[in-house]
Length: 411
Ligand code: DOR
Ligand code: ZN
Image (cartoon, rainbow, N blue to C red; front, top):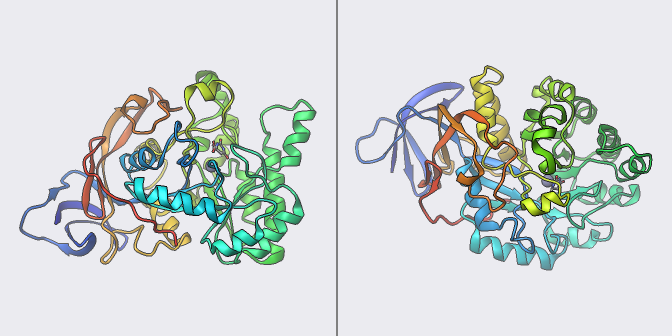
């Protein structure tokens, strides 16, 4: 198969070449004759990797499942997603991991990984699972996964192999509870900062890698980075939405953990762009009925890339910034050796975007089961046009074309 006239970054420069694909892998660049898919006028990005999604399977499949969630991923330009453990049951036992693996193998249409979860007791299970990653919630959010005492946090920090990514939901439970008792609403930024301080100090003490999921303020990021083995993920909603600007509009759809911050905080976050290691959508679908009852979380897989392309079109970001944080660096951090680059020998996961295409966000056009988006009605410039997954044209113009089969790649 040949992808014709593709424009893409090759060795730091923009090249315009054909990409030859054999056996689902990129095999050569050049100018080739023969049949192919035309990419004229489109920009080719490496298939994106989202390190932070909640596919809700098993147990919460009325919100999403491995099929709908990975279809949403492909349509959003992601060819690999890493799933979070706060499902039902939580992925905190070997049995639950086995069950999730079976479901994913049957339903996933793009590649995936499964994050194992920490509890206050499951030290032996974590060891036995030999999981490549571990997610630990320092503050309560959706689901039954909370490790909020220093002793248990310390034991996981020390017990889990130090070079493997330990992912943190960094909001401090005791601070959250105290703030609530004091009548201070809205999970204030101080809860995040205290959690970050605890985590980075313990990480430094035991000398381990730590991955801070969805940090929402410039100061937290700065504090995290005081430890040299900290990695920082930021989610699109904290960069593009704020409590001041979007609170009223979102009404009952407003809640997310960590919450949207003030417009001043959001602007400061843009000042931390070069301290951000990865973008994680934190795709966390809930039904509108659940949102009305207070469920926290936003869907994000189908809007994430376009928000950044739109920012690029406004002169706020360079394309390599996006490619690095949404493909190359997640591949490096999570050891996805055949992913994250358009290079010879890599999987032929390629997201073709029309950089200039203007479109209006509507959840009606999306694959996610949840049926709503916090960006409804927003006009964005830059859109996914086609997605190649392991060399197969899987998506075109928002429609899933091929019944592709995903594989577990986080091993
Ligand atoms: O808003 C959130 N929703 N934050 C989380 O940490 C979890 C997520 C979910 O799973 O719903
Ligand atoms: Zn999350």
